[in-house]
Amino acid sequence: MSKKKKIILITAIIILVFAMIMGGIFWITHKNKMESNESNSKINKLYSELEQKKTFSFAMTLDNENKIYYAKKDNKAYIETIYQGERSKFIIKDGNSYLLMEDEKIYYTYQNNQTDLERIMFALAEIKDKKFIEGKEKIDGKEYKYNEYEGTTGFVINNVPTVESETTKTRFYFNKDKLSYIKTIMGEYQELLKIEILYKVDDKLFEIPSDYVEK
Image (cartoon, rainbow, N blue to C red):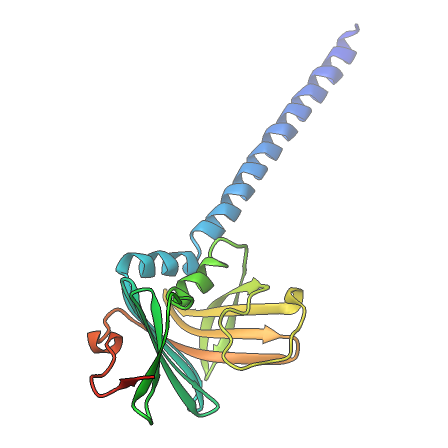
């Protein structure tokens, strides 16, 4: 083999090795970036914080006629819903759910039913490890950063027409690390909820008032 051919071959090998190394570095960097993007997302951090605290309230407000207040402490939960102006209250504890009728001072017991005990945690768990895109948007004149996830309707208050999950998007708006708003986009329908999370709840919420009668 001539000296010229050797130089060309060596150069080609060096270029190939360099390309492989750079490709490997890019793949590892890109992979780590994506994994970090998911595992260290603000939703993931919020989920971990709620799971650790065990006691918290999560209020979602669309307007005065439509809102949900959820309180959780250990294995007990309280859910107060106002839907189109109609209020309903549930207490979940001891493996049962209790529907409280405030006007009539009565309550109904649903044995072995605690479907909504982990309502918020289940909704967050559905997306916390999924890929998302980041963006910015102004709400009431203030700019918020958001994480947008596809295919989830876990934070919708109103009943809306069913649309393909691929067209559904949910944005979580943060003021630093504080979750402030959630917007669900379903086709042409959009629902923006104001969020308030607190880490102290009233123990009386989990008790059936003494003047209520079981039906």
